[in-house]
Length: 348
View 1 (spheres, rainbow, N blue to C red):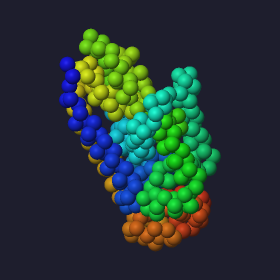
View 2 (view 1 turned 90 degrees about the vertical axis):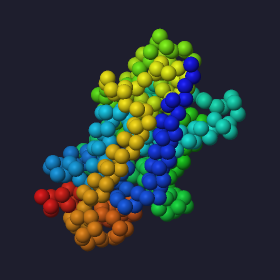
View 3 (view 1 turned 90 degrees about the horizontal axis):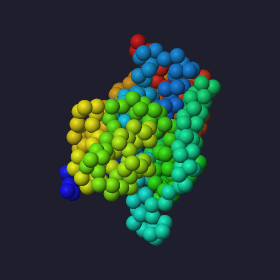
View 4 (view 1 turned 180 degrees about the vertical axis):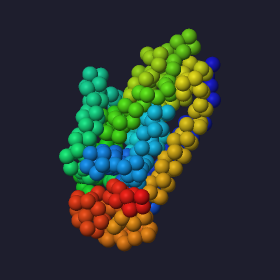
Protein backbone atom coordinates (compact mmCIF):
# COMPACT_ATOMS: atom_id res chain seq x y z
CA UNK A 1 0.00 0.00 0.00
CA UNK A 2 2.84 2.38 0.74
CA UNK A 3 4.58 4.06 -2.14
CA UNK A 4 7.83 5.99 -2.55
CA UNK A 5 6.85 7.15 -6.03
CA UNK A 6 6.73 10.85 -5.18
CA UNK A 7 9.92 10.96 -3.11
CA UNK A 8 12.02 12.25 -6.03
CA UNK A 9 9.67 15.22 -6.29
CA UNK A 10 10.45 16.20 -2.71
CA UNK A 11 14.17 15.89 -3.40
CA UNK A 12 13.86 18.07 -6.49
CA UNK A 13 11.75 20.61 -4.60
CA UNK A 14 14.37 20.98 -1.90
CA UNK A 15 17.17 21.06 -4.46
CA UNK A 16 15.40 23.93 -6.23
CA UNK A 17 14.82 25.75 -2.93
CA UNK A 18 18.49 25.29 -2.00
CA UNK A 19 19.54 26.67 -5.37
CA UNK A 20 17.22 29.63 -4.85
CA UNK A 21 18.68 30.35 -1.42
CA UNK A 22 22.19 30.23 -2.90
CA UNK A 23 21.17 32.50 -5.78
CA UNK A 24 19.58 35.16 -3.58
CA UNK A 25 22.45 34.97 -1.12
CA UNK A 26 25.49 34.89 -3.39
CA UNK A 27 24.61 35.46 -7.05
CA UNK A 28 21.77 37.99 -7.20
CA UNK A 29 23.99 41.07 -7.63
CA UNK A 30 23.84 40.84 -11.43
CA UNK A 31 20.57 42.78 -11.28
CA UNK A 32 19.02 45.26 -8.84
CA UNK A 33 17.75 43.63 -5.63
CA UNK A 34 14.34 45.18 -6.22
CA UNK A 35 13.92 43.47 -9.58
CA UNK A 36 13.92 40.01 -7.99
CA UNK A 37 12.57 40.78 -4.54
CA UNK A 38 8.83 39.97 -4.68
CA UNK A 39 8.02 42.76 -2.22
CA UNK A 40 10.14 45.31 -4.11
CA UNK A 41 8.56 44.33 -7.43
CA UNK A 42 5.12 44.56 -5.86
CA UNK A 43 5.84 48.07 -4.54
CA UNK A 44 7.14 49.24 -7.91
CA UNK A 45 4.18 47.81 -9.82
CA UNK A 46 1.71 49.84 -7.81
CA UNK A 47 4.01 52.85 -7.64
CA UNK A 48 4.02 52.94 -11.43
CA UNK A 49 0.32 52.23 -11.65
CA UNK A 50 -0.66 55.13 -9.39
CA UNK A 51 2.14 57.66 -9.76
CA UNK A 52 3.91 57.24 -13.07
CA UNK A 53 1.23 56.12 -15.47
CA UNK A 54 2.51 52.90 -16.96
CA UNK A 55 2.81 52.54 -20.67
CA UNK A 56 2.82 49.01 -22.08
CA UNK A 57 6.62 49.23 -22.23
CA UNK A 58 6.79 50.63 -18.71
CA UNK A 59 4.63 47.82 -17.38
CA UNK A 60 7.45 45.46 -18.22
CA UNK A 61 10.26 47.55 -16.78
CA UNK A 62 12.98 45.64 -14.98
CA UNK A 63 11.67 46.42 -11.50
CA UNK A 64 8.35 44.65 -12.00
CA UNK A 65 8.88 42.01 -14.67
CA UNK A 66 9.80 39.19 -12.26
CA UNK A 67 6.81 40.03 -10.09
CA UNK A 68 4.50 39.89 -13.12
CA UNK A 69 5.98 36.64 -14.42
CA UNK A 70 5.54 34.92 -11.05
CA UNK A 71 2.01 36.33 -10.80
CA UNK A 72 1.11 34.55 -14.03
CA UNK A 73 2.72 31.37 -12.72
CA UNK A 74 0.50 31.61 -9.62
CA UNK A 75 -2.58 31.38 -11.82
CA UNK A 76 -1.29 28.09 -13.23
CA UNK A 77 0.48 26.42 -10.28
CA UNK A 78 -0.95 28.33 -7.32
CA UNK A 79 1.60 30.08 -5.08
CA UNK A 80 4.48 28.35 -6.85
CA UNK A 81 6.88 31.18 -5.99
CA UNK A 82 6.18 30.58 -2.30
CA UNK A 83 6.41 26.81 -2.56
CA UNK A 84 9.40 26.37 -4.86
CA UNK A 85 11.40 29.61 -5.21
CA UNK A 86 11.08 31.85 -2.16
CA UNK A 87 14.32 31.78 -0.11
CA UNK A 88 12.59 33.17 2.99
CA UNK A 89 10.00 30.39 2.79
CA UNK A 90 12.77 27.82 2.41
CA UNK A 91 14.64 29.18 5.43
CA UNK A 92 11.47 29.09 7.51
CA UNK A 93 10.81 25.45 6.62
CA UNK A 94 14.44 24.60 7.37
CA UNK A 95 14.25 26.39 10.70
CA UNK A 96 11.06 24.52 11.55
CA UNK A 97 12.65 21.16 10.69
CA UNK A 98 15.67 21.93 12.87
CA UNK A 99 13.31 22.91 15.68
CA UNK A 100 11.49 19.59 15.44
CA UNK A 101 14.81 17.78 15.71
CA UNK A 102 16.26 19.61 18.70
CA UNK A 103 13.29 20.82 20.73
CA UNK A 104 11.82 18.75 23.58
CA UNK A 105 8.83 16.68 22.46
CA UNK A 106 6.34 18.91 24.26
CA UNK A 107 7.52 21.89 22.18
CA UNK A 108 7.58 20.18 18.79
CA UNK A 109 4.83 21.01 16.33
CA UNK A 110 3.42 23.85 18.40
CA UNK A 111 0.38 25.55 16.92
CA UNK A 112 -1.42 28.77 17.66
CA UNK A 113 -5.02 28.42 18.86
CA UNK A 114 -7.25 27.83 15.86
CA UNK A 115 -9.27 31.03 16.19
CA UNK A 116 -6.15 33.15 16.60
CA UNK A 117 -4.49 31.44 13.64
CA UNK A 118 -7.49 32.11 11.40
CA UNK A 119 -7.67 35.75 12.48
CA UNK A 120 -3.97 36.35 11.96
CA UNK A 121 -4.09 34.95 8.41
CA UNK A 122 -6.11 38.00 7.41
CA UNK A 123 -3.33 40.37 8.54
CA UNK A 124 -1.29 39.81 5.38
CA UNK A 125 -4.19 41.18 3.34
CA UNK A 126 -4.09 44.29 5.49
CA UNK A 127 -0.36 44.56 4.77
CA UNK A 128 -1.16 44.10 1.09
CA UNK A 129 -3.69 46.95 1.27
CA UNK A 130 -1.09 49.11 3.05
CA UNK A 131 1.33 48.53 0.16
CA UNK A 132 -1.27 49.64 -2.36
CA UNK A 133 -2.19 52.73 -0.33
CA UNK A 134 1.48 53.53 0.25
CA UNK A 135 2.15 53.30 -3.47
CA UNK A 136 -0.81 55.56 -4.22
CA UNK A 137 0.26 58.19 -1.69
CA UNK A 138 3.99 58.28 -2.19
CA UNK A 139 5.38 55.26 -3.96
CA UNK A 140 8.90 53.97 -3.78
CA UNK A 141 10.48 51.34 -1.62
CA UNK A 142 8.83 52.68 1.51
CA UNK A 143 8.83 49.28 3.25
CA UNK A 144 12.53 48.57 2.74
CA UNK A 145 13.21 48.99 6.46
CA UNK A 146 11.14 45.89 7.12
CA UNK A 147 11.89 43.83 4.01
CA UNK A 148 13.44 40.46 5.00
CA UNK A 149 14.47 39.72 1.39
CA UNK A 150 16.69 42.81 1.26
CA UNK A 151 18.27 41.88 4.59
CA UNK A 152 18.92 38.34 3.38
CA UNK A 153 20.55 39.48 0.15
CA UNK A 154 22.64 41.99 2.10
CA UNK A 155 24.07 39.12 4.16
CA UNK A 156 25.39 37.45 1.01
CA UNK A 157 26.86 40.67 -0.34
CA UNK A 158 28.46 42.10 2.78
CA UNK A 159 28.14 39.62 5.67
CA UNK A 160 25.91 39.35 8.70
CA UNK A 161 27.47 42.19 10.69
CA UNK A 162 27.28 44.64 7.79
CA UNK A 163 23.68 43.63 7.04
CA UNK A 164 22.69 44.48 10.61
CA UNK A 165 24.64 47.74 10.44
CA UNK A 166 23.13 48.89 7.14
CA UNK A 167 19.52 47.92 7.76
CA UNK A 168 19.07 47.00 11.40
CA UNK A 169 15.27 46.87 11.44
CA UNK A 170 15.09 44.65 8.36
CA UNK A 171 17.79 42.31 9.67
CA UNK A 172 16.10 42.06 13.07
CA UNK A 173 12.79 41.32 11.38
CA UNK A 174 14.36 38.51 9.35
CA UNK A 175 15.91 37.07 12.51
CA UNK A 176 12.51 37.24 14.21
CA UNK A 177 10.87 35.45 11.28
CA UNK A 178 13.35 32.58 11.56
CA UNK A 179 13.03 32.33 15.34
CA UNK A 180 9.24 32.20 15.03
CA UNK A 181 9.58 29.49 12.37
CA UNK A 182 11.80 27.45 14.69
CA UNK A 183 8.78 26.94 16.93
CA UNK A 184 5.74 27.54 14.71
CA UNK A 185 6.72 27.19 11.04
CA UNK A 186 6.02 29.57 8.16
CA UNK A 187 4.60 32.42 10.22
CA UNK A 188 5.70 35.18 7.83
CA UNK A 189 4.06 33.40 4.90
CA UNK A 190 0.85 32.74 6.83
CA UNK A 191 0.38 36.05 8.55
CA UNK A 192 2.43 38.93 7.11
CA UNK A 193 3.78 38.51 3.57
CA UNK A 194 1.99 40.87 1.14
CA UNK A 195 3.42 39.05 -1.88
CA UNK A 196 1.99 35.80 -0.52
CA UNK A 197 -1.39 37.49 -0.11
CA UNK A 198 -1.26 38.68 -3.72
CA UNK A 199 -0.18 35.32 -5.12
CA UNK A 200 -2.79 33.65 -2.93
CA UNK A 201 -5.61 35.73 -4.40
CA UNK A 202 -4.40 34.92 -7.91
CA UNK A 203 -4.18 31.24 -7.01
CA UNK A 204 -7.94 31.17 -6.46
CA UNK A 205 -8.12 31.28 -10.27
CA UNK A 206 -5.79 28.30 -10.61
CA UNK A 207 -7.03 24.96 -11.97
CA UNK A 208 -4.26 23.30 -9.93
CA UNK A 209 -5.84 21.88 -6.76
CA UNK A 210 -4.98 19.00 -4.46
CA UNK A 211 -7.82 16.46 -4.55
CA UNK A 212 -8.46 13.71 -2.01
CA UNK A 213 -10.15 10.46 -3.01
CA UNK A 214 -12.21 9.47 0.03
CA UNK A 215 -12.53 5.89 -1.20
CA UNK A 216 -8.74 5.45 -1.02
CA UNK A 217 -7.96 7.67 1.98
CA UNK A 218 -7.08 5.70 5.15
CA UNK A 219 -7.41 8.68 7.48
CA UNK A 220 -3.80 8.66 8.68
CA UNK A 221 -3.58 12.47 8.74
CA UNK A 222 -0.05 12.56 7.35
CA UNK A 223 -1.06 15.03 4.67
CA UNK A 224 -2.23 17.60 7.22
CA UNK A 225 0.93 17.15 9.28
CA UNK A 226 3.12 17.59 6.20
CA UNK A 227 1.49 20.82 5.02
CA UNK A 228 3.85 23.75 5.77
CA UNK A 229 0.90 26.15 5.72
CA UNK A 230 -1.15 24.24 8.28
CA UNK A 231 -4.04 23.31 5.97
CA UNK A 232 -6.17 20.41 7.22
CA UNK A 233 -5.90 18.47 3.96
CA UNK A 234 -7.11 15.24 5.60
CA UNK A 235 -10.61 16.66 6.01
CA UNK A 236 -10.99 18.29 2.61
CA UNK A 237 -12.07 16.77 -0.69
CA UNK A 238 -10.44 19.59 -2.63
CA UNK A 239 -7.85 22.13 -1.46
CA UNK A 240 -8.73 25.47 -3.01
CA UNK A 241 -7.57 27.67 -0.12
CA UNK A 242 -5.52 30.76 -0.92
CA UNK A 243 -3.13 29.51 1.77
CA UNK A 244 -2.03 26.56 -0.37
CA UNK A 245 1.46 27.16 -1.81
CA UNK A 246 1.24 24.25 -4.27
CA UNK A 247 4.28 22.49 -2.80
CA UNK A 248 2.65 19.01 -2.92
CA UNK A 249 4.22 18.03 0.39
CA UNK A 250 0.86 16.58 1.37
CA UNK A 251 0.77 14.43 -1.76
CA UNK A 252 4.32 13.23 -1.15
CA UNK A 253 3.48 12.31 2.45
CA UNK A 254 0.42 10.24 1.54
CA UNK A 255 1.07 6.48 2.01
CA UNK A 256 -1.62 5.43 -0.49
CA UNK A 257 -1.00 5.91 -4.18
CA UNK A 258 -3.79 7.91 -5.79
CA UNK A 259 -5.47 9.00 -2.56
CA UNK A 260 -4.11 12.52 -3.09
CA UNK A 261 -3.52 14.09 -6.50
CA UNK A 262 -2.73 17.61 -7.66
CA UNK A 263 -3.88 17.86 -11.29
CA UNK A 264 -3.91 21.09 -13.27
CA UNK A 265 -7.50 20.95 -14.40
CA UNK A 266 -7.75 17.53 -16.05
CA UNK A 267 -4.02 17.33 -16.75
CA UNK A 268 -1.79 15.32 -14.41
CA UNK A 269 1.51 17.22 -14.43
CA UNK A 270 4.36 15.09 -13.05
CA UNK A 271 5.15 16.25 -9.52
CA UNK A 272 8.85 16.26 -10.29
CA UNK A 273 8.30 18.73 -13.14
CA UNK A 274 6.58 21.48 -11.13
CA UNK A 275 9.60 22.76 -9.16
CA UNK A 276 11.67 22.65 -12.34
CA UNK A 277 9.05 24.70 -14.20
CA UNK A 278 8.83 27.20 -11.34
CA UNK A 279 12.62 27.59 -11.23
CA UNK A 280 12.85 28.00 -15.01
CA UNK A 281 10.09 30.63 -15.07
CA UNK A 282 11.74 32.58 -12.27
CA UNK A 283 15.16 32.38 -13.95
CA UNK A 284 13.63 33.58 -17.21
CA UNK A 285 11.95 36.46 -15.40
CA UNK A 286 15.20 37.47 -13.70
CA UNK A 287 17.05 37.39 -17.04
CA UNK A 288 14.27 39.46 -18.62
CA UNK A 289 14.51 41.92 -15.71
CA UNK A 290 18.26 42.19 -16.25
CA UNK A 291 17.77 42.93 -19.94
CA UNK A 292 15.04 45.49 -19.19
CA UNK A 293 16.74 47.27 -16.31
CA UNK A 294 17.99 50.73 -17.30
CA UNK A 295 21.18 52.19 -15.97
CA UNK A 296 21.01 55.55 -14.29
CA UNK A 297 20.29 58.68 -16.33
CA UNK A 298 17.90 56.66 -18.49
CA UNK A 299 20.51 54.60 -20.34
CA UNK A 300 20.25 50.87 -20.90
CA UNK A 301 21.89 48.64 -18.29
CA UNK A 302 25.62 48.66 -18.83
CA UNK A 303 25.61 51.57 -21.29
CA UNK A 304 25.35 54.84 -19.40
CA UNK A 305 26.52 57.04 -16.55
CA UNK A 306 26.03 55.45 -13.19
CA UNK A 307 26.11 58.00 -10.40
CA UNK A 308 26.89 56.49 -7.01
CA UNK A 309 26.51 52.86 -5.96
CA UNK A 310 27.55 49.53 -7.43
CA UNK A 311 28.71 50.03 -11.04
CA UNK A 312 27.97 46.43 -11.97
CA UNK A 313 24.21 46.84 -12.28
CA UNK A 314 21.61 49.39 -13.26
CA UNK A 315 18.94 50.94 -11.07
CA UNK A 316 19.34 52.03 -7.45
CA UNK A 317 21.23 49.93 -4.96
CA UNK A 318 20.23 49.17 -1.40
CA UNK A 319 22.80 51.68 -0.20
CA UNK A 320 21.27 54.34 -2.47
CA UNK A 321 17.82 53.68 -1.05
CA UNK A 322 19.11 54.05 2.48
CA UNK A 323 21.06 57.23 1.77
CA UNK A 324 18.18 58.83 -0.10
CA UNK A 325 20.22 59.59 -3.23
CA UNK A 326 18.60 62.45 -5.11
CA UNK A 327 16.79 62.01 -8.41
CA UNK A 328 19.43 63.90 -10.42
CA UNK A 329 21.77 60.90 -10.11
CA UNK A 330 19.23 58.78 -11.96
CA UNK A 331 17.72 61.29 -14.34
CA UNK A 332 14.23 60.31 -13.18
CA UNK A 333 11.29 61.89 -11.40
CA UNK A 334 11.57 63.61 -8.00
CA UNK A 335 11.88 60.83 -5.46
CA UNK A 336 13.06 58.42 -8.19
CA UNK A 337 13.11 54.80 -7.09
CA UNK A 338 14.48 53.36 -10.30
CA UNK A 339 11.26 51.87 -11.66
CA UNK A 340 12.82 51.82 -15.12
CA UNK A 341 10.13 53.81 -16.89
CA UNK A 342 12.45 56.63 -17.96
CA UNK A 343 14.77 54.05 -19.50
CA UNK A 344 11.88 52.37 -21.29
CA UNK A 345 10.58 55.68 -22.63
CA UNK A 346 14.01 56.70 -23.86
CA UNK A 347 14.10 53.56 -26.02
CA UNK A 348 10.52 53.86 -27.28
